Length: 286
Image (cartoon, rainbow, N blue to C red; front, side):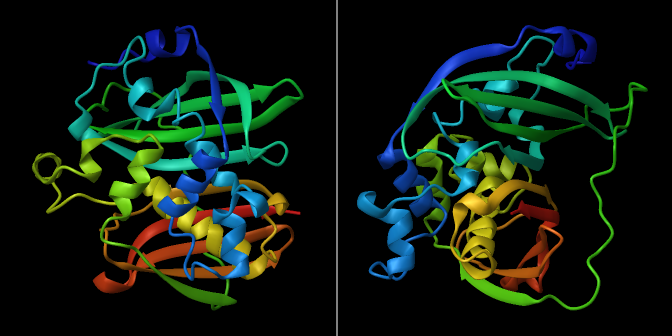
């Protein structure tokens, strides 16, 4: 088996320094569709350096996303075909508001390996601290198709009970045709999101949008719609990637809450009869 769970879990963490500045933050915000309309004061908080705040999902790309998913797939005990890899879910815990610029220490490791039968799931944990203490913790759940079935622990279910009743708010957000090409400049160079031939080998008709781009678009919608535009209110953000999004589509974002410090979210593609994109999604906030 190309995945040696014991070896992967026992491997020493990868530790390195990361840094970012206002330009990285602005590029990320543009990559998730900020800046429309360009002169809107609410949008300028995402695009103009003199007013800039940081959407917490920037943590998934800070320091060009190092160690990152692709880097993690080269850790000891893991040898897989990138065309069989899908990002299954993401969990983010924000320990304090993200600064517009900073230098920090990133520690990445394989925190768990689960056997789902037809696939293996790797939980890749990244913990980031600076001189003042912890900044954020990211868990990426990575599905590797065809690598399960060795009799290992299946792990916990990521599925939640559906929210009760109709959503409190529904918004739609268009995805640009070049959105994936812009988003990948923040550090996710997986050819699945740019190369038509690679996408076909992976089983898709054309390149797909990064799941983390959809993740960022949805969080921005929640912050702007339900949290008064205050990014510092977000303390955590979990999702399951339930389906794909193609650049050029329109996302429908359904929101329930806020209730008890949480907003429940579901995201689907308007263009494909509400095909699901993000499910079991929770924004935790103050």
